[in-house]
Image 1 (cartoon, helix red, strand yellow):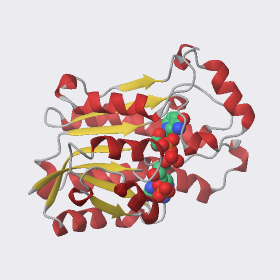
Image 2 (image 1 turned 45 degrees about the vertical axis):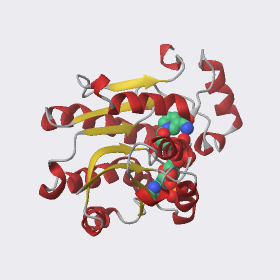
Image 3 (image 1 turned 180 degrees about the vertical axis):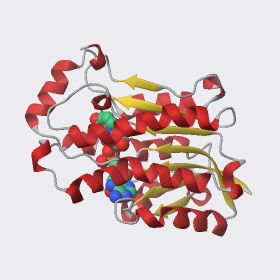
Amino acid sequence: MERFTLITGASSGMGALCAKHFSGSHRLIMASENLEMLQDVLKECDHPENHILWHCNFATERENIVQSLTDLLKQHDAVVDQYVHFAGLTKLLPLKTFSIPNIDLIFNVNFFSILEIMKALLKKSNAKALSNVVLISALVSERGNVGNSIYAASKGAMNSLVYTLARELAPKIRINALLPGAIETPMSKNLDADYIAEMTKDTPLGWGQPQDVINYVEFLLSDKAKWITGQTLFVDGGRSTK
Ligand SMILES: NC(=O)c1ccc[n+]([C@@H]2O[C@H](COP(=O)([O-])OP(=O)(O)OC[C@H]3O[C@@H](n4cnc5c(N)ncnc54)[C@H](OP(=O)(O)O)[C@@H]3O)[C@@H](O)[C@H]2O)c1
């Protein structure tokens, strides 16, 4: 059986860069809901023939995630030994304007999809292979920010998962989360101008680049981090000092 690194959110921003970065050294399962964008990223990867695309909408297909991933692994005679979760969705709105469908959408993509993916990866057929999980959380899960309550809560739930699963899954599987601050990607470019200005003012080292996060992912996936688990780590250009 071939071993793969699963990267969700691989169609855009940090996840796309991560896929390209690892494509020469890892076999990848690249996941997203937008097949066309995934195919474009695959074209820019090294050895495109080595990688598998997983087309799945985590917002609307939550109940199908376990089956869909299990079928994909079976079809390709594949196991996942490393899992990096970049898939994420934000809406910058005051709490009173959120409807239940909005809340479900954000929680499905940012949190519940992780539970379903982990359930698939912990099945007997894959569990022996899985050794490392990195989840991409956000600084706002630990520091307040007006208009970001549902997104922040979904990432806070992710952090709690890291603390508990680190104990539940040790010593075989390490799990950590990165909490980025302001990183230049399509997601942050769509935020409102005042919010962008505030983030700029609050970040001593200025805006981060996707590669700043990928470098940290690479470290956590490596043996250099073999004694690190259950951590929620800021990568934020100093913004968390406020
Ligand atoms: N950029 C920042 O400043 C920042 C700061 C802190 C944390 N983060 C976190 O970092 C991660 C990556 O963000 P980014 O800035 O690179 O954002 P991005 O460019 O918007 O990428 C988000 C990714 O999530 C995927 N996704 C969204 N909805 C999905 C769904 N329903 N089903 C499956 N996949 C879905 C997207 O796939 P599709 O294209 O298929 O929709 C895309 O690949 C996110 O979890 C974000 O919360 C970002």
